[in-house]
Image (cartoon, rainbow, N blue to C red; front, side, top):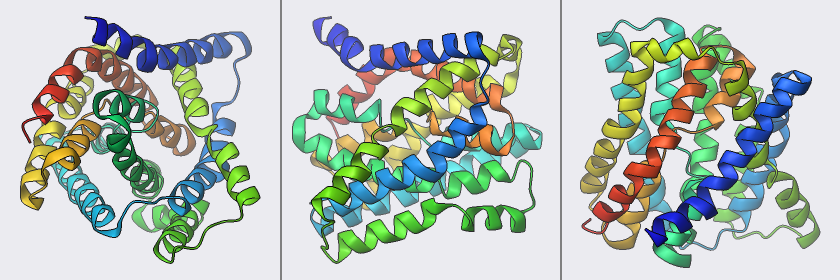
Amino acid sequence: MNAYLSLFGTVSMPIVVACLLGYVYQAWKSPDARVLADLSLYVLAPCLIVSALSSSHLEGGSFARIAMFTLIQTALCWAASVAVAKAMRFDTASSRAMELTTIFANSNNYGLPLLLLAFGAQGFTLGVTNVVLHIVLVNTLGLYIASRSSFSPRQALKKLAATPLVYAAVLGVLLYSLHIPLPASLHGSLELIGGAYAAIVLLMLGMQLRKTNWRITMRRELWISVAMRIVIVPLLSWVTIRLLGLEGLEASVLFVQSSMPSAINSLVLMERYGGDKEMVAVNVAVTTVASFLYLPLIIHWSGGL
């Protein structure tokens, strides 16, 4: 019980407080959340990616294994969500919303503190690499999926090519691969700006929850998407770990991190490009609350991998 309360206090409470402040701010000022979405996509996330990748000290073999897991697990989750959406005859907006919440986990502002508590500094270091790759994917593949709610595939690809995230990811990988350090002053500047990313995204979640019509909880699409994130995603993560032959701490960290609740970043993309924002916001809220109960089980099971 003490460990549970410690986890709630150090990891969950900051999320709750930030969302509450966003909720109150939306009720008080009714701001345009698209401005914050643009700030996150075009300024904060690129700075975070370049600073994190350029300063990574993870050895090449481990980086390659984590990257391979991330790519395969993402592909499996995408395929599963598309198949379920077609089988259940979801409309386009609901399908895109479920794809985003199934594929992308809240591995950053929730996942990293949890890994530090559960696995210590070594687990945290492994998790950072997965987070950086996750941020790259959510702002490239995720952007493509979200924009497909309103645009054709060709238009969506044009939107993707126009975002700085793609070029920030390429630059970051080059700096990491070639072991080129950024000047300390430049790295510090990028790190400072990128550090605001998580806070802005959490505030946006609170703002969207304030605008949400809670009758959405009666929709079957919502609960199917919640089940995909809580039940199907951990299963697919386990399958990926077995396919790659991962074991030990690496396997445990990746299993726990990929089983986090739905990514708040998905809401940023829905806000920017249109789509079923209410379904995404409520899915994030429901899976986050549910995670207080199911994540201790996930951590326990990860010890057997």
